[in-house]
Image (cartoon, rainbow, N blue to C red; front, side, top):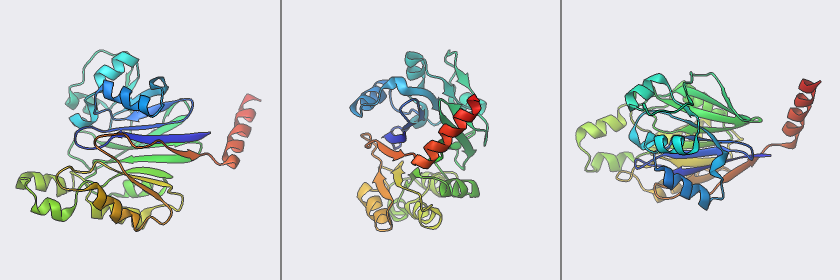
Length: 272
């Protein structure tokens, strides 16, 4: 068995991240259209029916735009906090809308999803980790600054979607108005390339197999710049830059046989 994951889209035009195994999958955010999600999953040979839940990080439109249509069309449960739902004005009728709490695991099939708070200019923003038999994937985007919770969760990941939003020099010399530059850099906006790289260099685990750099600014960053910056420090970690126009490949981490055996033994003991 393995856990699989990919970015279906990443950027201010829409964010959607897929994590699953052969039995079940979830989406973290759904900021592109239902039709586009279906199209991209089909291109990757991922059945839409595998998606058993959507988890919402916060209420900004590039993270929620496609949720109402997708949930109603595919009857998929939605996990969203009350504060986020209120500020998103997401009051469409749906029988399966649930809240979640910080540090309280939610089980979807045989996946375990755990949320923790992050710094971002939203009502009730969260990052997530998704675990399957000891393999942990992190989704860490829209982060104003690195905090202890981010660091501790990043340290425990076998793969991570990590925001690398802007190049500091490009933002400083770019056309954005002062208030927007202040919002991005003020601790409740986004992580710069430098901040993301420092997190990667100082806190990555030796077990970090994949780093998917995410949510790049169209105006204040360049994919080739980010790729070069991180790949020279990769040291065995596969580094990929997620696109705002297309999905990434589907990445895969096999569960070690010793862990498979341990879980099988535990299941047998539970039966007895």
